[in-house]
Length: 115
Image 1 (tube, rainbow, N blue to C red):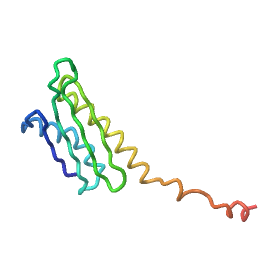
Image 2 (cartoon, one colour; image 1 turned 180 degrees about the vertical axis):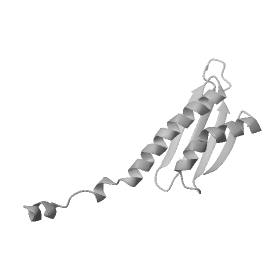
Image 3 (cartoon, one colour; image 1 turned 135 degrees about the vertical axis):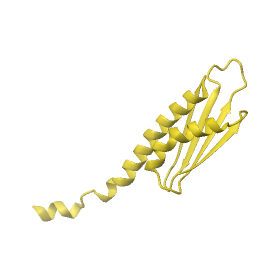
Image 4 (cartoon, rainbow, N blue to C red; image 1 turned 135 degrees about the horizontal axis):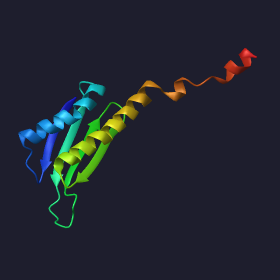
């Protein structure tokens, strides 16, 4: 997994980058080595928005592109919630790739031959 961390209206510190890498490492084990993952951390500058720290991630797989967005008052909490959401999406993506229903369906002729 190739992780790219970007910041919008917020500086991405080395500690924040390391925290994000640690949280997304579990997802990286389930993805191919060359899979590109983009993580964008941003902060809403509007004082009326309580959940101002936003974490968005995009995973570019061979099949569908997986996206998730989480917002909370704390950046680390946003990253935690984002990692959980991406984990569910990647798990579902992996299960679908392993079992493709159209390949395992019975043919119409198989039932007639058995009777």
